[in-house]
Structures are given as C-alpha cells and as structure tokens.
Image 1 (cartoon, rainbow, N blue to C red):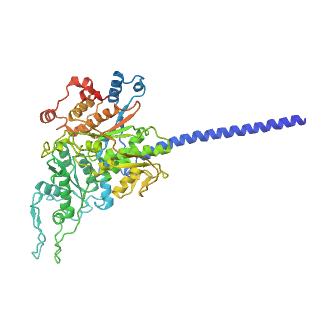
Image 2 (cartoon, rainbow, N blue to C red):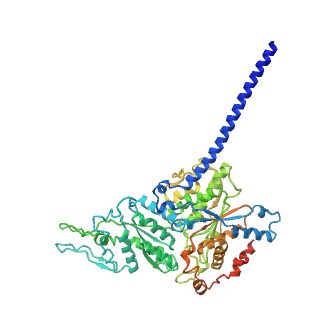
Length: 591
C-alpha cells in the first residue's frame, strides 16, 4: 500500500508538473506570437509615422499636406530589357538574372501637388526662413486675408496696380507742402521693377520670397508662399519652356526672364535674383512706395514729417543652390521613404543634379542607414548603396565627381558661348559646385557608433548649416565625433554622361512601353539607371526619380520643330521604338 501510495503521489505530482509545463509552454507561445504580431504592427506603424512626418500639416490639410509620400513604381519593361539582353548575349550562364532579375524603380516625385519634387525643398526653405525671421509669420488659415491691410483700404480698390509702370513717384505731404524722399526707379531694370511691384501688391504679410530658378522650384515656392500670404518674385533663364513662365504668372508671381549665361556673369538668373533681394531688403528702395501706394498711408502725420519710411518689408532670397534646407528636406523625407518602400534593399540610387539637394540628401541617408544597419548586423545587402550622378552635356559636375575638377569641354575659350545653351535638358547640370552638391563630394568617415542616435551625414549637414536636424525621433544637434573609423567614402560615388539624343529616345520609349509622359531630366535619369543596372549583380534594386511630367515640356522637349530644327537631333521613328532600344540608346556595348 505504501508503494502504491507513493506511486500515486508521484503520478499526481508528475501530472501537475506536466500540466504546469504545458501551461507555461502555451503561455510562452502565446506571448511570443503576440510579441511577433505587435512587433510587425509596430514596424508598420513606425513606417507609417516615418512616411507621415508632418501630422499637424495633415490635420490642417491644404497644399502642404499633399507633399511627399509619393509612390515607388517598378518599371517592368525597362527592367526586362536589361535582364533579357544579358541572358541573350550569354552573360547569364547560371540563369541568375532569370531567377533573380535586376529591378529598376522610379520615385514618382511628379505626383507631388506641384508636379515635381521641388515641393519638398520649397516647403523646407520657406519654413526655415519663417523660423529664422527672414520672412514674417504666415497668415492664419482661419484669419481674414486682409489682416494686415484690412483697415487701410486694400482689396476693393481697383487702382492698386495703376502705378505699376511708373518709374518715378513723388510722395508729398498734405498740408505744409513738405516732401518726403522721392521714389526714383529710373536705374532699375523695367522688368525687375514691374516684378517687384507685382509682389508688393500681392503680399499680405509684408513678406516677399525671391528665387532664381529654372522654373520648377519657383512654381513650388509660389504654390506654398501665396496661401501663407507672401509675395513671390522668380527670375528665370530664357532657355526654359514657355509653360513655366506662363504658369508662374498665373500664380501671381512677379517674373523676370534673363539670358542664360555662366554664374560668373552678373546677368545670371541667380545673381539677378540676389540683386532683386538687395534692392528690397538691403537698400530698402521700395519701403516708401510700399507704404504710400500699397498700404495707402500718408508719408507722415500733419505735425511730424517721417522722411524714413518704416522697414515693413521682409524679403528672403531662397538661394536653393546653397541653402542647406534643400538637402535637409530630402535627407529627412525622400530618403527615408525610398528606404522604407524597398525594406532597406536599395543597391543604387541614380539621378541628375540641378542643385544637388535630392541626389546628396537621398544618397546621404541611404549610406548612413546602411552603416547603421551594418553596426547592428541587420543590413539587407553586403555593400553600401552606390550613388551615381547623371550629367548632361555642358555640365562640369561629371568631371568634378570623376577627377575632382569642375570643368566641361564646353567651357573652353574656343567653344564657350556668350549665352550658354549646351543641352536640351532643363533644370539639371551646372558649371559650378553648389553647397548642396559639395556635401556629396566631401569625404565622410563612417563610424561604428556607441550612440545610435548619432548620424555622421546628419552631423555634417548640421555642422555646415549650424542648425538642428530632426530625422523622425532622432535629433542631431550636437556634433559628436566618435573613435575607431571603419571606412571613408564620399556620398556621390560615380558619374555618367547622357546625351540629349539618348534622352529624346528614352522619353519616347517610356511613353510607348511604360505609359509615362516625362520631361528631359527624367528621361536622362532612366537612361542612367539602365546603365548602372547593367553593371549590377542579380537581384539588385536600382532607384531613380521622375522629376516632372512632360506637360511642362511641350514647347521644347516634345516639340519636333525645336528638337529637330533648332537642336539638330533625330525624332525617333515608330520602328525604332519597337526595336532594340538598347542599340538605339547606344548602351548595349556596356552590357
């Protein structure tokens, strides 16, 4: 009986232990599954938060809330061209490209509300100017738009612009006959004077945004600044499509068109824009006019003569080429979006450079993220992403990346034109190194960090701009230089040339086979992406950008009279578009 009792007790105890173990196992499994589910959901939530960085703007709605979060589109026909051609030429004996092909993606920046990725940089630069005090605070979304001028007779008087063509206006006091300083604009270029007057009559905050641009940035600045109450002045080179200047005028901008020339020429559109800023902000030439003819105030009271008008106007020169708010906008938005959309597997990022902000901002984020994942041993690829510049004819950036010298053959004394029109492409290619692009040419020491919140490229931008950069929940404000360097490299690794003819051929092929109606810079980007993809290993992802749509280029790039008659290029025939586009692009020998 004793043995049986002990055996029964042992059996009961064992059952209890088994029951407890089973309960623990079930509980652990449940917790593990729950944790995995919550982790997966939290990752999705983090991605959602990362892609929606301005929640407050989203709640407010409006133009700003539509900027960013653009889709990443896979190009099946373009990608298959590379893979099929490699296979057909015997370059894939193990069928690696068949099983795991190279894929080309495009970031659809033309789906921003302004039709271009310049919306991102424009928003960043305007917000930076308002924070620094260079521009007044914007109008409240719910206030009367006559907040500043409402009691001064503005808005219902049709004589606001009657003096727009007046070069000299005398502001005379009523009563005692004394005269305030006269407004003599005889030495100001009439087109500049007219543009300034348009902006003075448009501003509702006393703020004026000024920029020299090839057009797209100006459109984005006007679309953002006008609802905020600021006036806008845009200076354009004359080699841009007429649609851009017409659109800017419809947006209420003061537009100045100048001859296209080298940056060393005072007549370059950026230098002219800076001169406009000096007239308003430095020399204060338009303060008295603004007070007398826009605000409708007397020059002084009946008892006291105010010979110096108040400095109400605030003008901000955006200077997108050297304003680091440009590169910051892509470092904090475009780069994280691309990284998230491909789950971190970005093997190459390829595009042209206008200011260099997108190329360097996205490239800097992707490389920084790779080194961060390398430290955590969770990277998706064995080598850091390759950042490649696509450069058009006449630009000196190709040689800057390749050989360290910013020079192009078109800049030689024998071939240099008085007014430069070296390429059909609009808005890309430079004959100088801007502050934004210069960041991509500097050698950066990538570190193994003990502090996960430290970002080497973010610190480089912060050091240059002397500002705090926020990237999601990471704030980079204090420059931290850790020890034990692991590697030194530049953001921009390589550069390739693309001709105008290649861009024309590619644009027509894209329209026929991918259904994309694009402009000249986008066509060059995709030609460059194909060149880079042809050198990549199987399974790699190559990303480029659709800068804008072809609607803005119908008078030049999509006009056969201009392309053939003025540029001397060949308009693609129907049979060419059905044949081997790689042969037509003259890049098949590179594969």
